[in-house]
Picture 1 (cartoon, one colour):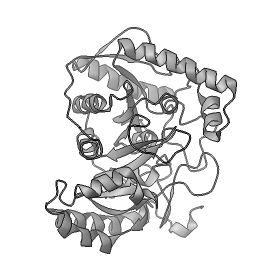
Picture 2 (cartoon, helix red, strand yellow):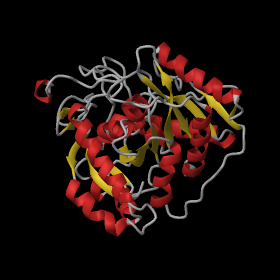
Picture 3 (tube, one colour):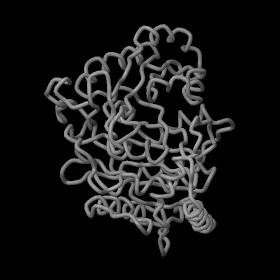
Length: 373
């Protein structure tokens, strides 16, 4: 499919599907179509993609993709004003819903980005990840999500916790992003098996038993396929919840600074001997729109925003009630290219995520105005 056809198909799919999903805040039909002729001779030749939030078009990664010939078709939803757990996003048609279970949240804050990719409205969407904002919606919508090493790409976040990221149908498609936003990118193929350690709870998280079982099954499949060689031990960290919140607030206490330093020490020691850490991407399955209860969806992710390590979520399977589950892969700081290579290899050994269709996974039936905002 040429660039003009791909952009037109993406816009048509958005028009048909988004009223029931709420993934987009704005759709740039005329602007997107106008960009196609100029993009035709560039490397990405009109590849349609979405950006996170209204300001996403100004992000470094978006500008790099546009320069390579990709075409932005719209901005995706992020949480509006509300409670601290509000991760469902607010699109032009109302609340953003999980495409696999409309009664559940898609995760956030890159909520609409994950939904747009999961439902085939776009193949690629930019995101940003300050506590799990790429990896959580990727896990809960059954797509691939990558948080880059903190500081590798420009970020407006003054706390230093947020890093640029991407959501895509696969790690292979995410390579399109990294290839064009990272200077000097060279693809990397891992030498198998990759030494790895699986840590179910990182020493502090409370993990839903069924989520843990799905992830553990995925890890066992990777080991059986010769993708990883599991080593003994785990990776026990101190619970980063309080430290993350203080650092995000801009006035960390001495105890928060000390906790961060201790976790950095433990992770430095871990990655000095093992190149890959495997964990659940979230401790819980997608929660309902009323909130997560007492469980932090970020429990497995925000430790690596504090430490700065690159981390990715790969689809691991589904719970019995139809909720996607993600397997998190973490590598050493700056090892983004090798992490992507390991994620690609892992994906090839794991079951393919079923194709989402509106017929097999019905969206909300109520008018958008009936959904709480």
